[in-house]
Image 1: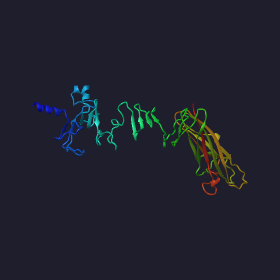
Image 2 (image 1 turned 90 degrees about the horizontal axis):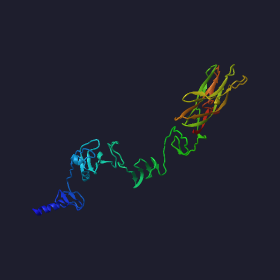
Image 3 (image 1 turned 180 degrees about the vertical axis):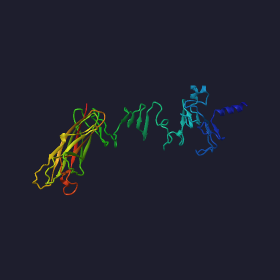
Length: 383
């Protein structure tokens, strides 16, 4: 009896094989197999069935231990590495394999189950409130290719690209290329002297100070067809010429706008008329969100009076106008302004034909001239 117990005791502390009478592999404390397979091929036709338990919480060893032992620090360390298959789904637990790391249960993954963790071919059924790529302790996160750190996120939230020690929320260590970055109506900072971005996404350097005007932009428009009017009247009428330009004064800036236009005007008169048209001209208007008003500096008109000895039944001349407008925008929002042209006819009692923009859209008189308008802007950042 003593000899038998001595043999069993020695075996209980040695390496063990379960499933066959063959000796275990040399490096295995527990070897489960039905037959030996020295070349690493199949050695069994059955698997291991792990215990299925209903875990009570992510940081509790119950029901493996009673309530008192489950909170004991020594027991928590003793059970470090124990593996179970959880079948109870709760707010913090999912169904699947878990191992105890000494303080909490950690899910183990396999296959397409959410419990599998992040797969190389993507995941489905994820919940951003629970699932994430990153760290849960006060450690940085490194994203690498070819074993080199490409994107580095510090535990404090700074992101470095090509930089393992970012000092800012975004810290790029090398050349950055921005494609099609749209910035519309962005405010100009009072002391912005380094970088500007236009509406096409182009990035460049600009030197703007609070004391000097710098070139802003140039706008232009050309009439596509003449505007004709021959309504009889004995007062003054104004006819929109479909020539207008909208400009934007950015927040906290002052802009100078130089307006130029050239508008051909033609009067097809009748020599038998005893009363001629008084004046023909062009009126320049300025429209903002608050109102529309004439800019007298840029409005022009001329008289068409001629004695009856002329056999010419049409006269024409260009009306050229210029004006300067100064807009100061101290608000936080962009200010839109539209400059437009309107035809001016005074006392056309006989209903003679008056034409603005060009004599004809086609034919031999096409090159008499087309109506044009341009606006040149200069900008200054306010103090």
